[in-house]
Length: 130
Image 1: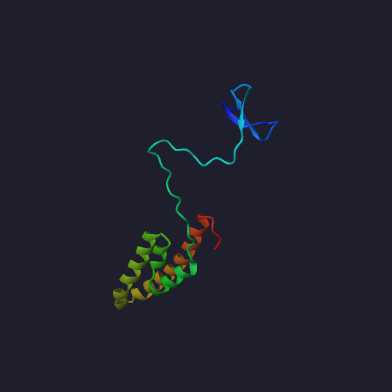
Image 2: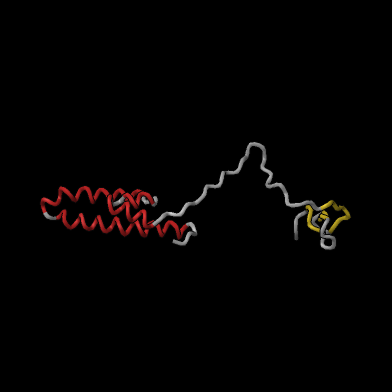
């Protein structure tokens, strides 16, 4: 059962008829174009729509090539990006004990993979094909 209100007339397309909740009444009014928009109560305003811009996986990959972790930060994965960058920076002093050679490569490759896949995941979450 529909609530009471004005509805398009089932017989005359240029009129609106009033439904009282249980039956059609004889009240009619001319049907105008589309409504001007939603009416908000005083003091209540809708939030502005923020545009969604696609993340470019190639740009994230390129940035991460020169500074591992920053590509992940660009994609919004700040915690992961900081962890990659910190591991990469800490690895340089560790090269003196030979452990750093492995961790530099691990941080570099991890940064590249996460930057590229992070941009693709972000785009997929927002319905953008990349």
